[in-house]
Image (cartoon, rainbow, N blue to C red):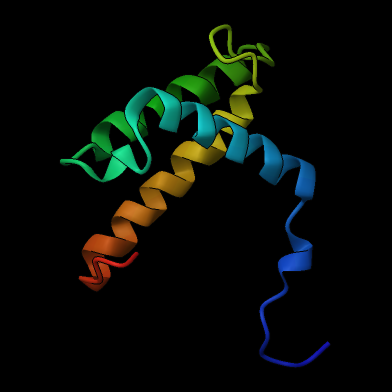
Length: 94
């Protein structure tokens, strides 16, 4: 391994695929990158916690999407990270 290079091979492929599937469902419902329209941070934070609490209560799959609640948590966390990075870096490309 070359020092200083990031290692995408560390990303668990199956888990990433589940998160991307949830993002794909969200895009079909709200449009591609629909999370960029307006200030939706609170809505994504609320959704993240709803899915996390459903998982903590012992529920594995979301009733509507039939994908794991933790995939929804991951998707919401990525969206929140993207929104924060865009605001904090002032870089609209993020």
